[in-house]
Length: 168
View (tube, rainbow, N blue to C red):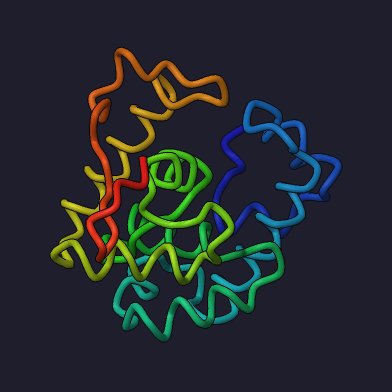
């Protein structure tokens, strides 16, 4: 439809926009969230991703989290993938893989999970991007809800506690 731009989206009704988002799933909810994000982009950055990119990451993350429908995972995905800023993305795949290997409890909050990776990895956009892509691949191919551990590249990986107790 050539209508998915920051200038066109505000002009469309949710009813018109939603079917265009159908392949993404939950398209009615995503239509509302996309409209909220574009309103923010237009209001704070005059519709310019380039202007947004010039903003400092921590401050921008706080602003993104104020947008209706943008949570920590979405904010960090925007920062990392759309804006090229070093913000490690935590998703269900990350929690599933690393909780099964004893890195942390699955129910640890988002910021707690993110702190583990930020502390352990150099803050480089390319590394965060690749690391997250590897997590997604391992989760989709091996660490499914019903795991396929035998073929997993992490098979045999164990996290030890301070008392050298194997957690997995």
